[in-house]
Image (cartoon, rainbow over all chains, first blue to last red; front, top):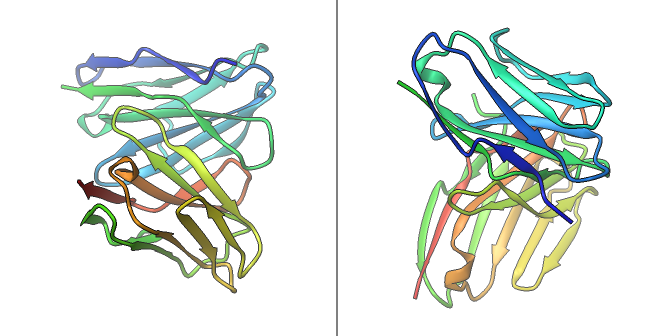
Length: 111
Length: 111
């Protein structure tokens, strides 16, 4: 069974640009969550989607948005990139209550 | 302010030694999870503890959930170089997939 797939693996952008990251969950998983990981703040919850609806949201500005498609694949978008947005963005999918399976992440560098 | 405090942040010991990592909070969690993360990969779930006072064992790893469900510990017996990695504790707060993570303990086991 394939794991959680995140693309692209690495991304370099400049300030002010926007970026879209993609996540394909494990087959059958309907919940997709997104986390940001930085050396200073650690892992922080961005949002969670279930059956195409945002079910939970973290404390991030509106520049961070996401969506989920009918096949459970999810995308997150960051607009007007700032230097502080440089981070590893992790996607996790789940089937059972509270058991998350993480992808390998997208490493975003903002120059 | 970090909701979950992990200690120590860094630990470097010799193969064969024992160690304990602590995860403390002033908040009560419905469950607490421990993950291990290798460089370039996403976190992998090791265990979930749900009941206050619960103890779970995974080979040489012993996990304990505090009686008040506010703290947890991870004890490794006879550490091996393969145990090297970033260990993260995470508490479920306000939603099954909305996890609050500790800053992590970077563990290095020297041969």
